[in-house]
Image (spheres, one colour):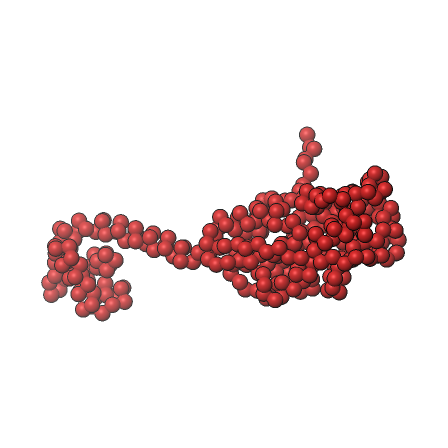
Length: 303
């Protein structure tokens, strides 16, 4: 039909063949084959010029609509051909997988690319350092400061709180200050690569310059909470822990001079994974219209 429309516009086999990037005999054969399929002559041929038959002129509007419909169909097919598909492995530390920003980002990703299957993998304290470099996951929802070499997108800020044994006398004196907790032993982490990260979370050294006294080592949240519940040490966690990690024997206390914590989406800078690109685009789209935690603007009080 496209060849017929070109011929109908040019009314010359030579010019029409040139426009269609075909040899003239080939174009003539294609038009003859169309006439045979339709059972009607479309073109009046002579040695000097051609013209459309009545049937040919009647067919032109229908042919245009058909060609336009085929163009639309091909465009839709092209979109589906380019649709991303595959498995995206995303790590999440602690309760990050259930945070509002994670839920919103993954919902946006699913709406944009329903062919992407998202696999959420829980990562512990040590795995957050190694899972990305080892290729075990493609991205991760983590709590900064991040390991060296990671790239990140800031997602949210929220307060930090102290996690104490429920029978600690200071529980009844809340809110506390860091000075109130200076004599308490703090849970430690198992590898040197986590030192900078854990020093931030434990505020080591303290504002007065004193170093933190570390005690039992924990590689994940459950081990940390167990050490606290048994009275072996305390810890500092995001305020969301009150909701995500309610445990017998553990109390969460506000500390007025603790700096906020942040959440981030992390990935490796040399990754060119198209599914990762789709995740980052979805995350940035969500963050353009929504803020979370302490990042949420205060309501306007202007009259």
